[in-house]
Image (cartoon, rainbow, N blue to C red):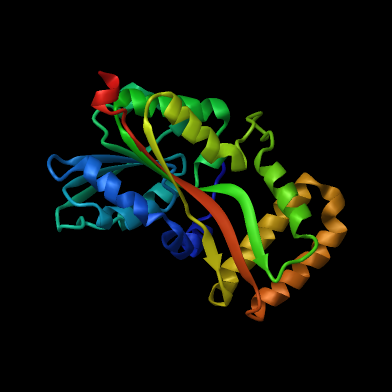
Length: 277
């Protein structure tokens, strides 16, 4: 799985928080109820930004189990989740280093909710199907947020925007060095189809970053990564992409650039008892 620097994850956290689809929270709260302790597994937790956002928005006692392959990120996350829930109930946190692609239904036994942020697009089709099967067979709900969908809107527009977006999206669907073909912008559609095919109830929502002049540093780092991935995918773009990037960075520094980077969120609820009967 791809490694991410803590500084980047902290920089993007406010944009992530503003983008997350809050309309998914009411049906999630209704499903979880306010009775027994809620056990939440956060897959690929990074620095814990989803836990920091979600724990204080859910009522009741919560036991969070954080999963990541990076021990440094796990340390950041475990130390930073809030200690109380929406209603003041306690929240406790443990961390487990493990390969999240190896999780099966037995591993999720006793879990109320599986969460993930900016993860699905880094999986393969087989890995996502395996995860969906594990979640549904274990009877968990899932809240899967901020998966890229491939749509980017930059204002003012530039004639090179479409070519760079297409190259970036192809890069996100690349065959990685370990031989895995990543889903990239296809991930939300593939996940929704997989979960629905297993009988789960799926609710989709948009969750776009909306970056204005007050987020120039995030714009800069995002632009460098976006253009860099596009050029890695299509090296013949480099001469024009270098000029493009300089122009866009100057606009960002001058407060003249607006960017909307689209993502998708999914709420997955277990098959209804009526449907199973």
